[in-house]
Length: 151
Image (cartoon, one colour):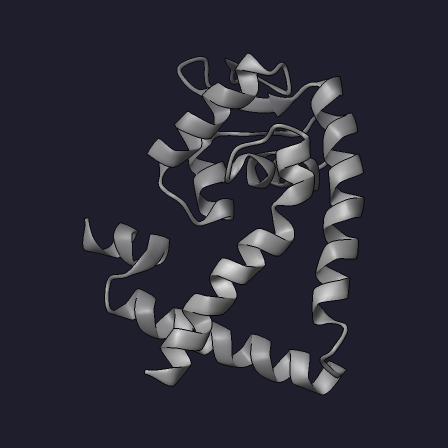
């Protein structure tokens, strides 16, 4: 119970610690994940909803809601895929690239400050243990990996 309780407490505290730059940019929860996934893709900064879903570990329904919000803000666009006229791709606009680049710098600095108290060895151990826990939960049908297995 102590382990799960600490993880739940950390999740809440991390949300509070990481959220301010995104809230200041008027981004909803998960919106930055869409922007960052597209930016990491490199030019022309486009992915399908399915690819975004895989990269962000969320359902395609969650992707659609986030993309719709970002389209309304002029940060992403949705267009016909050049590879398949039946498909659609989501792409960063120039305003989306500029905002994402600024927020990535702030976010990385924020994460570094949060992890500053851990040694490199501590970080590697924590990453390994969290990955193992994630695999265990996914194998039991929980989380995005488990959702796709359970369908």
